[in-house]
Length: 323
Ligand code: AVJ
Image (cartoon, protein in one colour):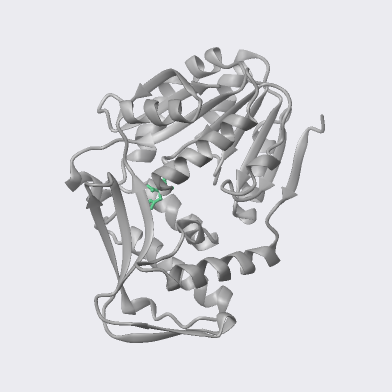
């Protein structure tokens, strides 16, 4: 194996514009209007998300890190993988806890980082090869809802999907995703899934509507991305950040709400869209789970829960599942 950094692209810069155009066109035609949250993450969005993870109100990153701090060696003992695959890896920060534990367990050789954003991946990859000189780092630019079949195979893989990102999918999508992943996996592979748990709605809403306004800036950044990449003229100040707990569906909804009547034009789509004051654009759902619910969804998709850990406060869960 080549030790160092290799990069595969399943999403090229040119596909990006096409995919964004398609998502914006279908999302603005839908009722209610909706944009997929993956478009938050350009370089600015990545930085804003990193800032979110350090906010006092946003507990989930710290809780998940605490769980991995306490249990990375248990995870490595249960699945002594030679390959760690991380889906939606971002800056690969918490990944180091897993890499260290797998290295200590003896067999670690390869880290596969899979993310939509090439700039974030390239930067994370460079810093990982500097910190782990004997590790082969394989960066894959892709969309985990579309390119799962391109995951490098071979060896014994631990597939980590952390941060609660699975909560961005609606239940049917989660089922499809977990089944597709299950079909990809050999008998010695395992899935490590991070999920945020249901809790007091006030805490949930505060986590998505922080006092410093970082989440509001993150939410509005999706409009900046569309302005830049599709030649649109969204007035960023024309939309207010809204975070609401939807108890029936057990998810947080983030919306952008028009603060006045306005017309937005999107040059690349030759499209004009009218917003009335109070009209909403749904930009993200972030589902919150129960321990039993996670086990049931995994079982439906063909996974067996081997172990499940939470932090002492019971805010977040990390689940290890086997095919
Ligand atoms: C990265 C999808 C896990 O849903 O909590 C943070 C994104 N959105 N604040 C989440 C997010 C608003 C985050 N995930």
